[in-house]
Picture 1 (tube, helix red, strand yellow):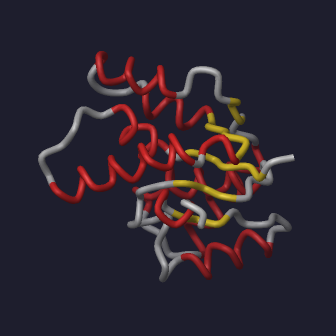
Picture 2 (cartoon, rainbow, N blue to C red):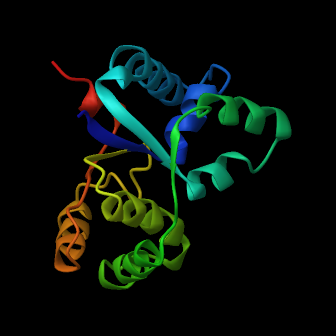
Length: 157
């Protein structure tokens, strides 16, 4: 059995976006594409109902490209346990209320036993300062936390 990776919406957006002229965005797009091509098959890949809702928002043409990326990928439900854990994370990790969806991504991944949560969201998810607190909160509620990381961190050797 392969290790499980939960793809947060930013990964899907980078995979489906038109090439950017912004050097940072372009580098992230390239790293995401490289991970997708070289490493995706080494993992069981999952998204959630929340990811689906987020990628279907906005420009219809872009939403269609994003939706095509996740075609055939297993969909995780948003359980009551995940909703409760997300609220706990927001309150006890001191996250702003606007980070509720970010906490829900973490909670969905934790409640479903994901090994990794792949994201480009460094504000509230793959954040080195928040990570130890979020991990402790997940463990405190009986869930093994996923490793919160970016594609370059999960590239392998």
